[in-house]
Image (tube, rainbow, N blue to C red; front, side, top):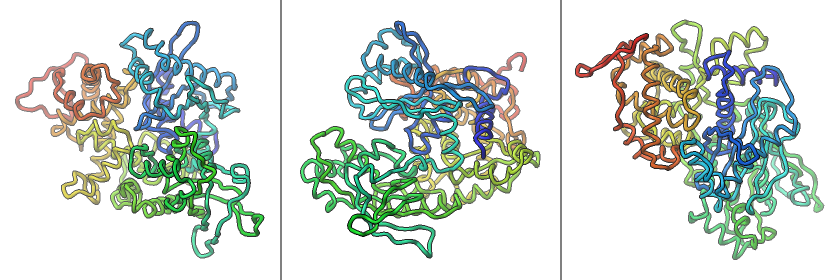
Length: 604
């Protein structure tokens, strides 16, 4: 897919989510922010993101923020600021514009860190709780990044880092070109290229085994500790294969042991550590000075086992500058993928990740694209048409497969247009989407609020239990009901998005869970499948309860940030037991209970 086509597809997705193609609403910028942030989270560039729009004058300066993401250990913070044009034609954006936006976000961060911003903010401001929390977290933050997100083309993707209160802040740009490169290729790791002659002073001596009868080549080598630290500093969590990424903090027994070895006996590190497993798309070899094979550079580097080791080395050195990484060596097994087929490659990555982590605490459920449950959902999606007989929903079992389908089948403008009409992005469901929709309807909004990866892992764990609420092998009825729950959730998103500037994800999942709790056993799911939409009356009910859910979320949070409070079971209990307006009359999808009093609203 060409860049111009990708741009127009992205804009179409933004407008679909807004549900008004002619809208010039500023909320389009927030939707764009949400799409890009979630993509970055899915590929491991950032953590679980949240939109949070804030634009204000502070003294003589303008402050801007569009969203943020915080690591589970509250030691890594990403801030996002968007420059959205809504254009369907490729346009360039000057470095001065992207740099200005980064500076405006940097001022927001500085104001929070120094405590000056909170003193001048209204407590009702959606960014107020975030500002308080940043002030509290700042001392313990090990990594801070500011990303400028834009649907235009930027010449410069990285700006010089800045310093605030002894902290280094990295400034990056995620423009439409960089986004296209990642999304269309389905391999965001392509951005990761390591020249070992530059990083280590020479190529890495190795044992190299070409895979003449397989779809991969193989190498064994040893990576200097300083080189691994340098690569992690440059690429961060992008190095870690998406299904198993998570940096467990240095309070755990394994990480504490790594840290202690680095401090006390760094020369013994290779003897004590099992090493790391790396997948790569390509390596270039040369003969070393000793005449043996050496790895000169590597493209598409992904650590599928040993992310814990890698991150611990980086953060231990950051916290303890006295650590001498020049005495540290890490054994590494490298698998060089040679498959041309994206699904074959995805399966290979999943299998390598699963077996490489079989002795670790990583859940097998995290590596589940090939589980029969997902394979069957994909088969059903490919064969079951909507009631109109033309449209279908798309289940993206393998990451990037929707874009692969567009590129493969949309070989002419007419064919591409027909695909977009029958299978629009609004009908695409990813694995984490599926877990989110079903878990929300199962009244677990607190778990969904933990983030897509954690909720997905918990969802997959449920599949393995004896009393699982989900079938091991889905059938047609289950599939159609799953789609209906997707329609309910996506409709709630469309209604929530223009009504609230912050915590939209939390309001949405709690709203749908409330619908399930109060009306679920009376909703005619088959009717919604037939209509592929909700009635105006049910949408009005959602709008009414959304306002009340938002109120209860804020009230019950007691000054805490809603996105953090929403992760607690006590939050769901407060929302579930809250006081709400009566159920509207005349919703065709809903049968009223015998003892329920209802009322109608004029004009509906």
